Length: 198
Image (tube, rainbow, N blue to C red; front, side, top):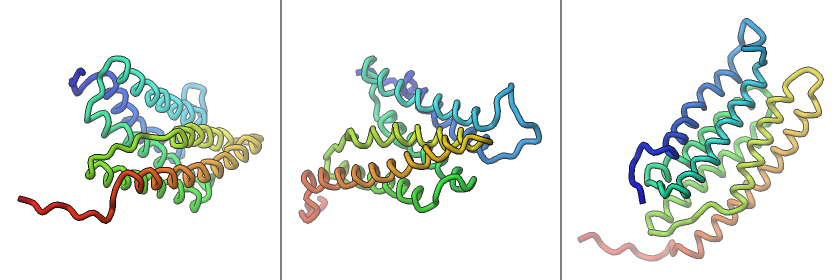
């Protein structure tokens, strides 16, 4: 297995992290001019989110195909995903396009899953991403893009569709959290005593 740190998958992951502040700036900054390169703010933000999502697909695919799975990549990939989703969702709350309580549920789930995986890792147990988690990520991206794109005149139906999907994301997030907890409890004994350090 190639242990080179700066391989293509890791560069793609770092690029995804690099895109996050630009997406937030585009979403939250009021510009004096209406369009950049004939594209409005909503379209630019959606294109950047789609680009970030493509890097998410590519980095995992290339890492497996080229056998370039590294510890750094395994650490950075979920961080990049959480940064992207959390930043965009918090921006949508600030823009009054998404309910705050819904965003809190989704982000809290991310922290909970991260905590579960950390405790599992301490106990030398790996908990891979489940199908529900992957479905959640895809629906999150779709919901965010529709909400942002729907933030234009006469695009209310797109905005409302995105909000409905965001509710679905919250449901899937909670169900997948229960799945993670169930797997965790089956694999990790929380009540065992740690051996004393020598």
